[in-house]
Length: 625
Image 1 (cartoon, rainbow, N blue to C red):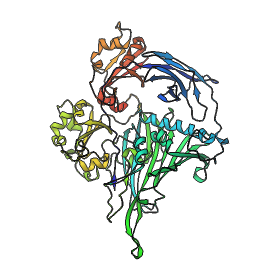
Image 2: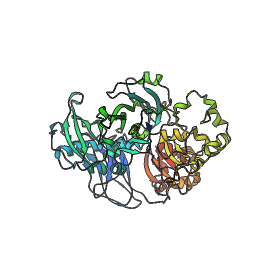
Image 3: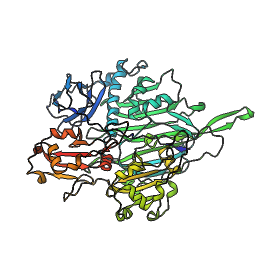
Image 4: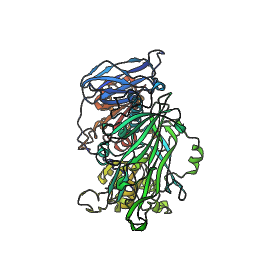
């Protein structure tokens, strides 16, 4: 059995400076006149396609930037209420308009829905299916958006266990802690790939099981290949309303069937139960599948709280009386995780499980991954394999040690560079640091695959996200680094999947668990070239921030060059206004100096760690008064 990780390629692109067009404003309740804080808001084009999404702040304020000029509408959908849709708005290239709206709080009566309707292969065809789907879609879209906004610190316990065919454990669970900011809590393969290949993929190394993530469930590909019907909750799902889905009749690939459960009173998404069907080689395993539980945090964002996936282990056995062979399920491997605690960047606890105190003290952080299990009886039809770590567990797992590394002294571990060793180095960047301390990490493994010439290339992962080849190490400053780890071919493919036979260098930058008060990695105000505070520019005659930065920190505006062939904005310098994406550096011209108390510059590694893939050009953070 192998653990296969889906490779999410961060393609490199030619940056182009395009004018941004935005709409800013405020949402309020039409009855109470109170601001609608934590409300999701989308910008949709003339065909109703979502082009941008954000969440309102505590004052109900928002800023949305469209990818191109044109006619758009604002759509706000609060779960449990009818959606608000604005009149058409015209956004001109480089312009910003103001638009505020008072939203009528009209509740949706889900309790009146007839929940045993006809099976629909078009979610908009049946009234009951359409009503439930609207609530489910909004929650899943919020989960997807939140996963790309690393504003929360997670303390997570992950686990792996072996069970018999009936679910009885075989030996103790393997558990370990995995803490940090999560960019993608649950990640599957791209929807088009799942439509083309199915949810269980067979290759020469075994079977790979893909779990469904939010992007997959709301994708056009998933809607094209599945039919839906509403169903009532019974037993443990009493009080819940289910939206069940099954593969379309003409679909023959391995797939999933399942039910998305929402609260019938509040319309809040509760959990997803799913089962793998049409398994290869006609394997029958009704328990193969999993569960993903969702939760809305006080800010209005949605997260994945708990998850588990069960993958069958099968063997080929001789039938009695020499009647040939048959495939028999002999057990399951279960992998999953539980969120113990969630904090904001300022250290505010937004969620804590009942068992958090005991678990946080008892479970070791970044403990070893369990060694891959091996099926001893041959020929097995296919060792089961977990979907990408991202398919069943939060991405970004820096510092996790393979099982075989247990017991090595940390200060003598040839696969780790950390702490005092980093501080003592005179290197400027991560590449020079590795050259000095672990030069063998950079050795080429040669061409190991005719079909994939890059299979033997050493790859770099920054805070759990693909960052490129070893040359990207030159972009990470030594002072930003908390730890580096090297994974050889076997461990890299166990952790990140096929295509990593050249090995992986993991880089963890200096984020630590928030403890309250100041944001993480707050730069020192004294002589900090990456911070510009009001007291430094109070005598300036600059009117807007572009002029101010040109006067005091002109190096912030330097181009970072070509960083992606496929993403034309990957190397572009981005601007964030009070934590909300505002666009490229041209947005600085629209912000008055008199409104600002502080600016901060985040170079590539810090911007990548804080805001995720696509910020390799750096970020200028603007904090207003």
